[in-house]
Image 1 (tube, rainbow, N blue to C red):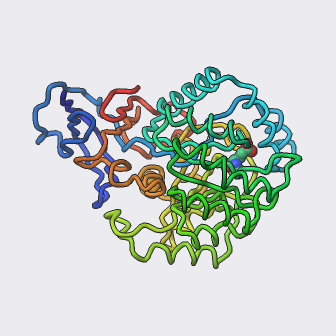
Image 2 (cartoon, rainbow, N blue to C red):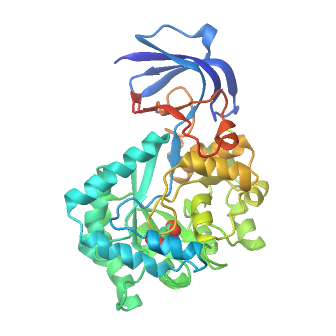
Image 3 (cartoon, rainbow, N blue to C red):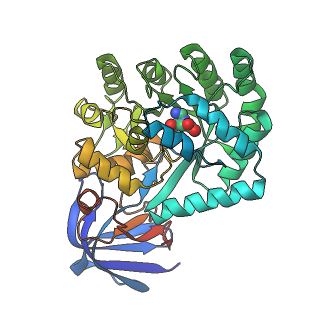
Length: 396
Ligand code: NIG
């Protein structure tokens, strides 16, 4: 195994239990793992040496919510939205048709391009969902293709009731043959619990069946209006509820209560339900930004994710989402960086191996073309990713 010393790091944000931000720092990678972190003057020797050029380093982004398996283009729908039309879940079936028409090879190529774009922007751990198949064969095909390209796959057969199909019959298909066909490729299950998609009862039925099959749970909830999504996610012990744009005081309380057994700084104990905020999606759908500040103040662990998908957020740029969280959601830089690294890792229950720069963790590192991480908000839209290591390998 080759070891690499990365030295001359101007600012190293570790997101470790002490939330250390080191200046003039160094990191040693050994194989796929981080072997040493500290002051550059004290760094041990290694087989190779990389000069970081007095730049800032962070953990690689953990993007815990994307929908990357799709074909087709919905830019006209986006343009109509910018002219005043509101977002409706029905657009999902436009993508479903285009995706069903795409061959395995075409979908694989599209997926690889999107994963490469995400990594080029500093993302090193990536979840993606099915949900544009909406029949047994297609959902299984999308799950199989995704499993080859990303770290974690979520089964989202309950994304939309296909047009012309009876909702209760569709729920039976999702909880029966569709779940069985997707099961070999997925670790998580999700439901779009929203008016226009799945009701509370239908969502509960789907999630319970998926939990019985051994899958972890997450919920798309409270995106387009107040509703039962958060309540249901908490009731069923989901690892995350995603979108969370429209929250009542009770929703925030319910989420906060799930975090009583958790040591937030050390990321130890029993994690609750992460509230995943998706600022790029909020801007693209003209929804109120998810109340990240209010959630943090209440003691809820939040994640920031890209929600890259063709309908509501066609960007995998975590740099953009982090900058927006600081500029518009009133998160401090430290809070935004944590939400986009450790927050996502906790949402995926992968926080023991990714999400921070600590000895023994996966060597997932993001070197910025800037001396300090605040440049992500200070220079929005600029190409600030200089280099990326994913599982110890130089990826960018
Ligand atoms: O997370 N909200 C549901 N699903 C996606 C959008 C899907 C689409 O419109 O294609 C989301 O925003």
